[in-house]
Amino acid sequence: MTPDARRAVLRQSISVAVATGLYGISFGALSVVAGLSTAQTMALSLLMFSGGSQFAFIGVIGAGGAAGAAIATAGLLGARNGLYGPQVTPLLAAHGWRKPLAAQLTIDESTAVATAQSDPAAGRLGFWWTGVGVFVMWNLFTLLGAVLGDALGDPRTYGLDAAAAAAFLALVWPRLADGLARLVAGAAVAVGLALTPFTPAGVPVLLAAVVAVVVGLVAPQDETKEPA
Image (tube, rainbow, N blue to C red):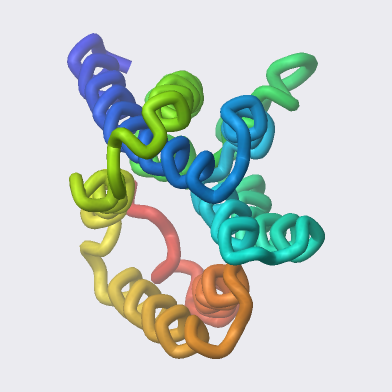
């Protein structure tokens, strides 16, 4: 990996970490508004460390739902991270203490940055820098949001809820260059949107991912291979 390529990966990782971390302000503030303490809010960010699952959890709690329902909803939504394992495991080849650390850091952003690289060394660098960067920034801004709480008002008015999604879309967009990728993305979006009003949180995401799995199984091998 050339120095220029290394710098490009690091810039990408830092940008994603900052954009995602800023969204943590929203989670921290909304969590304490939902009735959780600052310590409970930080425990979710440190241990669960899955933004979508965390928001789902406090959404159920804030609406007066039982703890069991909140845990089930968050767990169902977080199950998507398990789908990333087959992608990043061969790339990282982590052993010993790095293996549970890699599992904790396997999230949307770290997987997206890692798999967007054409060079395996760049992919590994992108995974670790993005994963650690998001973890640190997410927890710092979660604490800031929890401490400030009501003083912030509704953090979504600042557009922070769109920051992480925009960063993720910027990573995914270059991978939609061929027709098959666009077809899979379009079908996944259609499935997710169609199921959202009728299924519990997390189910549309998982079933949308099934679209890519099915296409990967039935499409000719030369159409699904990544370009060299």
